[in-house]
Amino acid sequence: MLTMLEKIEAILEQKPGQKAKEIATQLRKDKTEINRLLYANKDFFVQDLAEYTWALVELRIELGSTCWLTADLFEKALLAVESPLDSATRRVKFVVGEDCKILLEALALLLAICNQLVDSGKLVSVDFTASKSTLTYLNRMGFIDLLRSQVKVLPNRPRVSAAQAYEGNNDAVVELREIDHLQPDDSIPDLLGKSFVACAGDQYDVAVHTVISELFGNVQEHSGATSAGFAGLQYYPRGRRRHIQTVISDGGHGIVGTLMPILETKYPKLAKNIAKSKLDYRVALLQEIFSKGGISQVNDSGRGLGLKGSGSYAQKYNALISVRQENFVLKITHFGELIQFSHCLNLARIAGTHICFDFLLD
Image 1 (tube, rainbow, N blue to C red):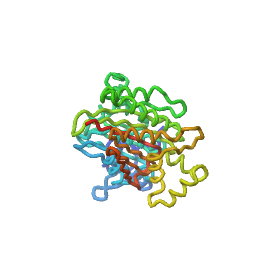
Image 2 (image 1 turned 120 degrees about the vertical axis):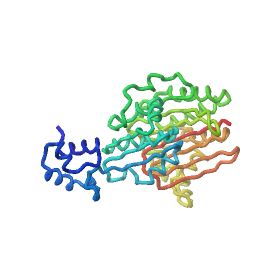
Image 3 (image 1 turned 90 degrees about the horizontal axis):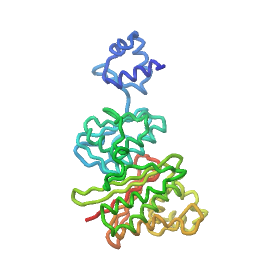
């Protein structure tokens, strides 16, 4: 049975901007009692002092209009308010503006943070009212299937999964697949690889299967996850350059989070070099992993080389690599034999490791 506060919340969620008298009438309660509850719970309700109306306190994150939402733009949207996972605000609302199309890398970050917010006890909604075609695409990609059921999807959560209905009938898409952190489905890397080769050509066969398999294994080795991750692929045939984005995400401790605790005892020389570096120690560690490899929390021979191997193939095909950690991102850009590292610190918190390989095909 709903409490009086929950009933007021439901009314204001349906129609914000109502006066205490209007709320009281709907609840068949005395206006004085409703006013007392509203003023006593300013963490949940906020008043427009000019109009004397009430609304729900929420962290509103605008994801833009008439644009392709990249991962960088998504990060800027989060920073324009405050870190949702660290905010004291109980309600978080993501608003997808008119004609806003979401690239796979940004879609993966949105999915990850929505689920993590729900798991932390927050009330989350994603509003596609102004961009229903984007909701149709996300349903096709399997986003809705993996989105926590507690997340409110506006105007309505799709009743039928387009990802399940059309699964596997388009080589340009590999719907987001759940990666069980205890028993990962080993067919997922092969599925991603086959789709990539079908879109890009046989010359990518060995490279892509190697990259994807190694990153997939990284989820299990380095994540320390207690919940499922996910992977997906999207081919973009139009625009200035044809490209394919492949994402592999987990919600665990991340590469840095699992390696830093063992660095000093297992790799003391490396720990000293990182301590002397002018770079942020987390960035320095990731750069070491992608340039030299050989760093792992397990003792098996040959472990810890996967990310470097992935980077080597990415270099061969001029791929862009983005490695998003808890509150920073490292980007690796390849120009033939040259490798350029760049990073951004102090991002909004999102747990885990979220890797995107963006292969440019032209």
